[in-house]
Image 1 (tube, rainbow, N blue to C red):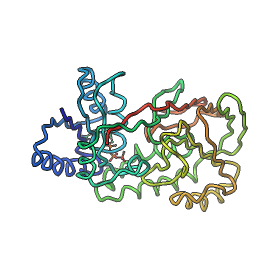
Image 2: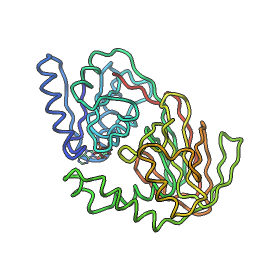
Image 3: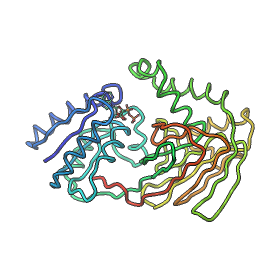
Length: 304
Ligand SMILES: Nc1ncnc2c1ncn2[C@@H]1O[C@H](COP(=O)(O)OP(=O)(O)OP(=O)(O)O)[C@@H](O)[C@H]1O
């Protein structure tokens, strides 16, 4: 059976618009399907868990944004026979952009229903006393996580999203967050062996895929099936120099600039001198002064 888990509100109702188009296509092609609409946080995970517990060779397609895909992937039971697939319909779509998926819903569904092999992908795991979890796209500590936290709680977000001006929220909060950011010191242990000290750190961005925040190319070299995570650390320069540096990020031209450290690892431990906000795919569990991340090689398989 083809199951479609749809977040109708993803991408300011793009989820619902795409789903109407997909439904029409499936009916024209005579493909049997079942629709499951999410109503809020946790629904996608619960639906996937319920389907995969039956151990049938179903195809579960998520129509929504990166957040809904993340939830659905978390609901896959170990050893499930069902396959997961994705039609991007979010506002940020960093997963689709990074992996090279088409943003045309019908093209995506065609690829899913005609495919019989899955693509194995890495997943990032994050451990912290304050809250652990996984990330498909990226994780971060410091400034970028604090911006996520502020955006997630911004009253203007829903209103601007409706006007397709969601990026303005990021810009305004990004600038405000930079001016009020408190730089921190950090000890980093890479792959259990190499130790490095950083002072005046603005943020660490940890990537399985190159983009975050709706198209910001923080880690141009991140590859989702190479068994590695890519780190981008911004540290050791004045805030005045950070503003022109951050304007280079959308095009990925910040790498190699003074104050930018690009590293690759399978595991990294971060010890901060003070608790810092951290995020996993934009969700912020809280603040921590000790975070460990590692790569779960082939932690996700996607059809099509
Ligand atoms: N019907 C719903 N209405 C509002 N929120 C929902 C609904 N269903 C699920 N959600 C929640 O909305 C969150 C964000 O949705 P999603 O990621 O699909 O869209 P987006 O934020 O527009 O896209 P992106 O993450 O790519 O920017 C999900 O993680 C989920 O918890």
